[in-house]
Image (cartoon, rainbow, N blue to C red; front, side, top):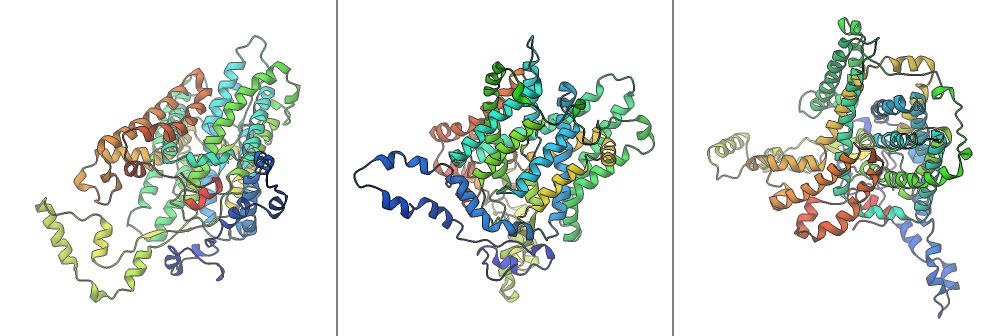
Length: 622
């Protein structure tokens, strides 16, 4: 790290004393990134000299000068960091991040598409891998925010399958891939218009209310798909024995438990911190490989459990050519494709941007500016290419994008610990025996205020060795590397390896990722707070200042939004679920403030998803 670039004040003490190599090449925070915004907002000299004194014409047409300004701002603010995005990748954190996000992106994407592959016969594993590679390459090389992982998601598979069910009901149905090509083209055009007109500024209305509700929905979709992977094996097949289904269930449970065991141990005080970090980095990949190997051991191998279906190397489904000539579609179907493209635009506007917001959440100490407008323009490019090649359209992934950023976090000692070390030990008047005496008195006397948390106990003895996030390795290599591995999987030998992964392991992976996302979701935390013993809740818990009835009201609204979204995806009207998701924004900004919440209560129950540093790209926060 160069000495001439300052760090933020809140992390400089923690960064200085890091002894492990993860802190190398981490980009420092610059506090004048907003100067570029001020330059864009300031009228140029040419504009000021040509402005007439008594004419309103320039004022009426002023919106024309703002077309594309968001894209220009993103490119100008992120451009100076482009080379650093590559050089900063010389950091060990990139290795576990690549391994983790590769397994968390590719295998769920393939499993999500199994139903689409089997039902439509228009897609295959090759299409899913090509889509993931295409998105990773474009966003890592050309994107403004390479931390956002894009790939094939559950909502897009539901969207494509629903369109297939609708159009095939016609007496003379169109060519499915031609129709989807036009749907994607209409959606791409809407993406480009949105980016050019700076409509991404509406993201300032996206708060934790919308993100938590949508994240809660995605988590349950993962759990549901895990169950579907298992139940799909109950379909009678002559070559499959009943024991294979039982083995798949055992493998799914084993995958879930093993991955959670590694994750839980990484958050305990046991073992050295390097061992705990290794468990957090490689626990899920190790669990996946080990559980897959169990399928070929002893009686498990004899049961012959179901595995992933694959095709030929670099071959499209059904032996078709990769280029889809969608312009040959009949004219009437071109117009019919437009409303479907509009719905896809709504889905991607919310899904991709929320994924990007969560990948740049306020809990991550990010240094480099974002670029929502330019990235959404690129999403239109990937959507168009997907229609041209007959691929499922990729977009931002939840929960993979936040997982990717989390794996790139550099941990360091708490700034409070650094400050405490400067205080002589003689200044500490409380001894461990006094702490034990106080703890025992708390158990005998309910009137004595209990210790607030372990942090207070550590403060009483004058030391705090907890590790906290001090930086994020913001670079482009991990995204590009995991996408390139998808391309490697398309070769013959690796397709054979992919074919060896049992379906039960994929089900367990779905359950693990869904349950892990639920555990950190704001809705889950509010539910746990309501059922928690108040005497065992830390006194500094912010929800203490909110009336319980208001917590239940806010939580109830979120659960209704989740229930409506999840319910509609189980029907033939599943294609309309993005509309319900988008309605969360006016619900939060127009309806909830009129309910009996105080300003302080709303500030505690809800808040911006990302920090003001990140939200500056879309006009700040409300």
